[in-house]
Every structure is written in C-alpha cells, then in structure tokens.
Image: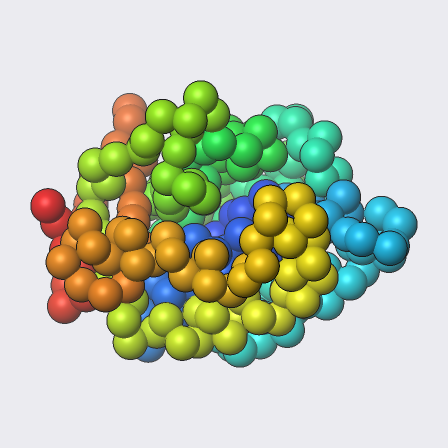
Length: 255
C-alpha cells in the first residue's frame, strides 16, 4: 500500500513563515528521501507588516516565502485568502483540492484543528475537507482526481498551546531534526519582515531564537536536541498507513 502513494508532499499553512516555524526541518529530511516538496500558504500575510500597506506587505512576504522555499528546492504557491479574515469557503476548498491533485500528493501536512490561531484553525478545516475531495470526480476543478485519499498530518502550534492557553501534548510522534535545523533557521531568516513585527507585537528581541525554542522543547521531550512534533489524521475515511513514520524511520521518535 505504501508504494501506491507518490513521493510528493504538500504543506498548507495559513501565512508565510508558518511552514518554516513548524515543519521545515522535516521537509528537508523528506526531500533527502526523494520527495517533491510543495509549500502553499492560504494567505499572503498582508496584515503582518510595518510601514507598508496590505498589498505591499503581501508582495514582500510572498517574495520572502519564495526565497525560503528555494533553499529547499521546493515550489511555493499562495491561494489568495486574506490574512486575518480567513474562512473555510467553497472557493478555497476547491483551490486546495486542486493543488493536492496538481502535485499528486501522497502526504499532506497542515495545522492542528485546535491551533491557537484562528487563521490556522480555518486552514486546518479547509485542508481536512480538500484532502477528502481530492479523490472525488465531481469536484469542479480541472485537475484529475487522485486514485486514493492522501495521508494527512498535523504540525504543532506555536507555544504548544490551544486557543484557551492549555498545553497541547502527546504528539503521535516526533522527528529528530538535528541534521536539518540549520537549513530550517536559514529558511526562517528569509522572513525579514517579521523580525521587527515580532519585536513590537510579542516583545521578541530574537525572532530566530524564540522560534528555535520550540524545537528545543520538543527535542527535550523526544530525547534529542531539536525535534518537530506531529499528529496523523486518523478519522473516518482517512488512510491509516504510517508512511511518514516509516520513511523517516531513523529520525522518528515515539513516546
């Protein structure tokens, strides 16, 4: 059954820089295993700018996302939702399903449904539906349906908290990203527009270092230096094959 899934992984994040913060280390390991990598953001992050209007911010942040993706030799796309006003809509479900079909994804990664950020939760809902729609022939998009529903995984939220501030614990597995942390941080450094924004919004004097703390925290739980955490979407209708776990066997840690 594993061989039936193409070696293509697509990440759907709400904003530019989310992929780098939560999953870039794992993406590098999958790239090294021969996977094609596609990064999609639901929005261009237009509200996340200082001294620029929304459109100018989107242009700057898309350029940053493209530069980060290039370090991974990955493709980058933006699906055109609006930062801060992201909703689960028919149009975005169709666009998302079309992207999954276009890249013939075997693995789909997105935010947790109980993530702290409303845009992240909306993204998770859209991708949940679209991953299932990817196989259905009556979906109104040009791309041919997949032969089987892709495997669906969730990444960890910033601060490891749910919307009410309660800790999100017990991931299904961790990935040891010690060998790919440097590339992950280089990708994150491409998002220069966010450094001053995070200083003003959240008091982060060291954006790079603060994001790295999450990898260190998951690593401490996993028993390594740096780690990323994942949950597999195992609800009704979704396949249960632990493909990512097997592909990353030497880096995969379960507790």
